[in-house]
Each structure stands twice: as structure tokens, then as C-alpha cells.
Image (cartoon, rainbow over all chains, first blue to last red; front, side):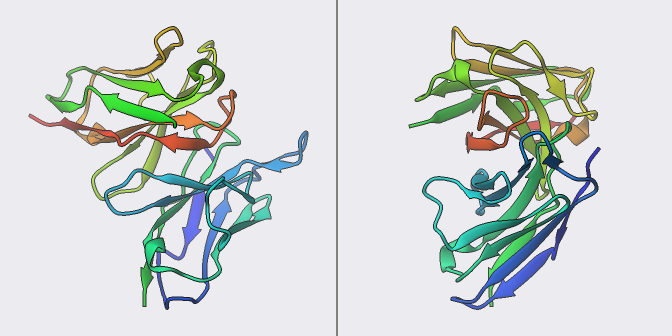
Length: 113
Length: 121
């Protein structure tokens, strides 16, 4: 199984400041045939189901604010919130869908400092 | 708009069975893969199972393989999860999620509100 490791477990960021979340996979999730990284990011607010933010490592889902961006390839990925807003308080998860089981990272809790 | 509504959760004794259903609407169900994902109380997300658009294959997590079975009925726009030999560690909110593509190898772009399964004596 591919193990997804997120860091940090939690972070507190001031409003308007940048938040950076890292995700590392135990093996590459880059499919050479189509040059796509099978990596997604989700946001889960308290009491809500997860919401897709980013797929193919860097493609923003429709309707997601452009302050959210994804980067990285192979085994190392980053979710960046360029200017943290109050509504961004949530837990963020990465997931690989390259190889079953389609494992999630442990989550990163983002709070306001 | 896409709607996914789970049902069938509840309290069941260890060793018991339960069938979850997910009613889909607002999109062409037969064109998309469908996933089940669960979340134990206060814990992270665990992928459970997926079936591609036509239901011809099914993939399950090792933790549920042989006990749970995912299935779909494209004539009724419904996804199901048959759960047998339930264990206390299966206690979780179970989410139905639409795949972003027709392939099983897909992210989940829309999620239901979830249904709670509690396995306890």
C-alpha cells in the first residue's frame, strides 16, 4: 500500500498569512503514460463532509478560490493557502488514487493564530 | 446539482450485517465511478471501496475485503455497500462519493452527508 504522510499535523496562521501543508507518498504517484500525478487535496470543515479542492496535484476544482493552490510531483506535494481567511479553518487531507487502496494522509488541522 | 444521499446506517451488534444505500441525482450516474469512504469518530478518512462507471469491477480496502461488497444499479442510480461480519472498529460515518471520472482510479469530486454506522453490543 502507498503510505501518505502529511506534515505538520496542525498549524496556526494569522489571517491574511500563508499556510503551507506538505504531503509525501511512499512511492511515486506519477503515471508516466499520461504524465499526471494521481494526487488530490480535500478540505473538511467541522461537521461537514470533505470537499474536493485540488486534483491531478495542481488542478483547482471549479468554484474553489484561487488562494488555494497545489504543487509538486512524484512523491512530494504541497497545498498552499496564499492568504488565510476565517472560513479556511478546517482539516485538510491529501489522497493518492494511483494505486488501490486509495489512501489518505492523516490530515492537517488549520487554525487561526 | 449533484446530490448524494446515504441511508441505512444504525446500530448493529458485532457479527451483524447492514446494507448502506446511496441515492444519486443531478448527474448521469452511469458515467461516473463511485466510492465509499469512512471516518471513525474523531479520526481521519479511510477509503473503503470503489466501482467504475459500469460496475464491472470492484475494489475494496484490505480491512473490509471479504466482509463488505460494493455494488451499483445504474438503472436506479443507486450505490450500495453490503456489510457483513461487522466489527466494533467498523464504527464510522460512511460517505458515498462520486468519482471525478468513469475510471476507478479517480478522486472524489462530490460527497454525501454520510450515514453513521455503530457496531456495539
